Length: 142
Image (spheres, rainbow, N blue to C red):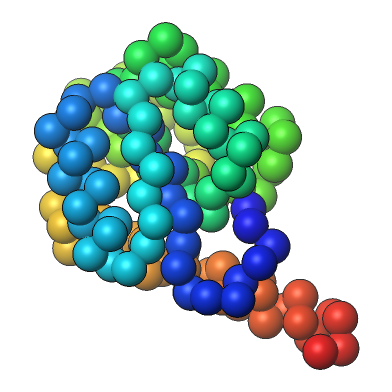
C-alpha cells in the first residue's frame, strides 16, 4: 500500500482474464478519478504489484497463469493488510470462497459487475485508507 497520501487518487490493480470486463473496469476506475492498472495474468500482476504497490486489488476468479487464491495468498503473505476485492461469478467454488475468507479478502463483487457496486466498494475502501492516513499523522504528531 502506498504510504504517500498527498492526493486522494488511488492506484487500483485489476486482474481479470475477460478483456471486456477489464476495459469496463479501467474506464470506471478512471471515471472515479483513480489510477487503474489492468492485467489479465496473475504472474505479471504479481510483478506489477511489487513495482507499484497499489492501494486496492480487484481480483477475478478468472485470471491467467495462476489461480486467484494463489495470487491473493502471495500478496497477503507479503502485506497482510493489503486491500483485496474478489470478483466472483454466480457459481463460486466453495473451496475458493473458504480460502478467500481464510486469506481475509476485504470485499466481494458479484459478476456481472454493476458500476454502482464498484463505485461503492472503492469509495468505502478509499474512506478506510483515509482513516489509516489520519491515524498515521496523529501517531507522528503532524
